[in-house]
Length: 536
Image 1 (cartoon, helix red, strand yellow):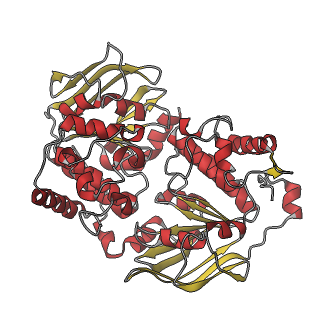
Image 2 (cartoon, helix red, strand yellow):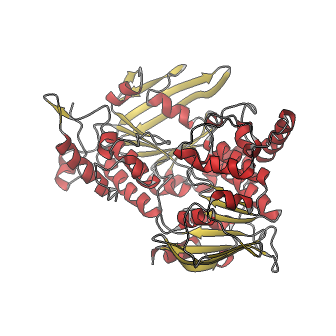
Image 3 (cartoon, rainbow, N blue to C red):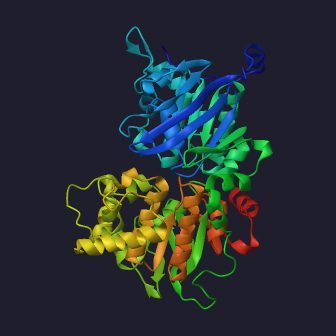
């Protein structure tokens, strides 16, 4: 079958094809266990045609298991699944796709050495008489890319794209096709506000065409913007079912967290947790330029102060973090001082030696060693890591090892350090030897924070520190940041979430086109005010 791109809805098309509001998907009594542990306890969910149904819950609540069962990646132990009123059983993802289910996965599933169009049609190449019809396919891909605001050509290699554009390609791959149910698992995790709004316009178009959409996101404002109904999971059980107009964010949070909801706190007021008016500056940057991305940047960070970087994707936030860490070459006019002394941060090795630690934006590619256990990832500075050929996606990690040395630590001491950080950060895992890839995104991020704590830096640079983690894990990471600041660490937080910056930071620098255009005090500002500066 030739894969068809969905066309924009016209008034005539709406009249000739009325939306059927019946159930597209119904699951009843869904149960699933892994070993002796049951993770789903009789789940019932109904997805209606032309509706966005949000599925919420902490990491480990059961969302991914439900998605994997509905998309044919896992078989349920009990329960039934109906599509269009008929019971179905999927032998695998291909069977689910043929039944009309498309999925935008949380993790990118693209081949970087293939072009955009090759990735989109991989395995379902449009053919006629045995020949691939790339010209027709290219026109369809170009139209959807344009709708989502991606300027890249369909023939461009996917690996050459920014993370946000790769996320959009993943979305295009899912929404080009013949389907009745679209599963969107954290589709905006790498998108800025403008890109998210463009995606929402596409979602509303698909709704009007009668597509049922299962939407998963940790960003609650998205749920209340785009969803019609919400189902909340906790510990493998449904704990709330509501129409969006009949609930609010606080009710949803309490449902998600249960007894833990009382632990959620607001933003600390006043000065930084370890800061006073006379605190010494940890970092002073003057006239930092790294063309074409950054021009004449001036900023300071005091001991115990948390400073934010706000701005849309491409504003220079990420590039500034990388320049401070020595990953980008800066102009000779740039002056950087650490603890009152001039510092030459021309490579990560020098930055680490000076007490600067970077938590990278792309946790999967640049933050973790996927083939190592938790203990080795956490105590990476002195882990017994075998040398081998350098891989591009591990360059940051290898530079970290070179900078901090490979001194050996006794196994007992390693376990002792591991257990102390595991307890302090509430890292949910089965033990020190677990693979880090077996953990949820939030727990992987906590391991990286533990690594930073072990290094004990003077300055921490955090790029999107809570991307892809749930509300409970976010608050635990916020607490870790508060604690690091309380012991005198200066911290820079670059985030696409303004609410996060207001929660964490005393001051926020707003970037636009590679320059700082404003500096605001969080206590005197609001999300709306900062967004107005960003959009000016």
